[in-house]
Length: 196
Image 1 (cartoon, one colour):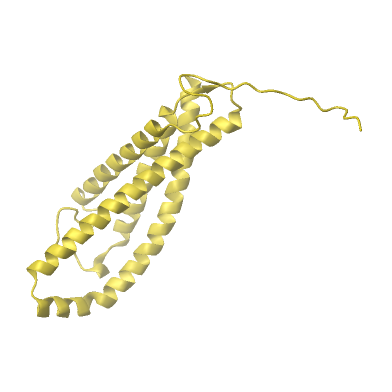
Image 2 (tube, rainbow, N blue to C red; image 1 turned 135 degrees about the horizontal axis):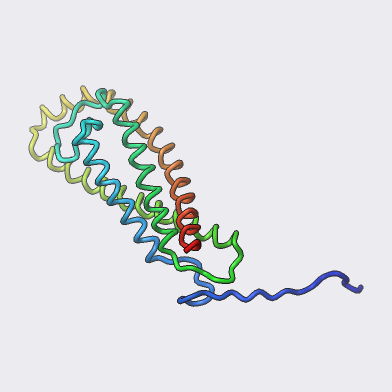
């Protein structure tokens, strides 16, 4: 059988400054993640300072779970979205520019860099929160006597469970949207990088 109308096309990809086929730039991803973490810390502290947040980052004597205000939840969500956008943009903008690659592939790699920066920042912050929670729990257990601690835990257990369930739902939604924002911001950062 004769094949008519089929033409073989070879595409040469030229990558400026890096090895051919290198699909990611971990320096840009780590830089974006660190930028996102820094913005999170700044916004979290600013929110506490302005009274937007009822959760004080430097105090172990926070309000009860039922006083976790709607404004605090909204502020934490907005804070996470802003930091994801900043980190994603930074990762997309700092990624090495490729010449001769299809536009849709460049956009995909830019958005992937934004998503990876968001993911790395989220994992680092979650690990730091887990370590901090473990230290705070150990400190509280050492300083409180057993009878008082058991009584207080029984009183707050149901309230804490309800607050944790509500917080988990909003956190999951916020993280999903934050990942999307990080990816879109990575694409925007790459667009601005290529426009130069």
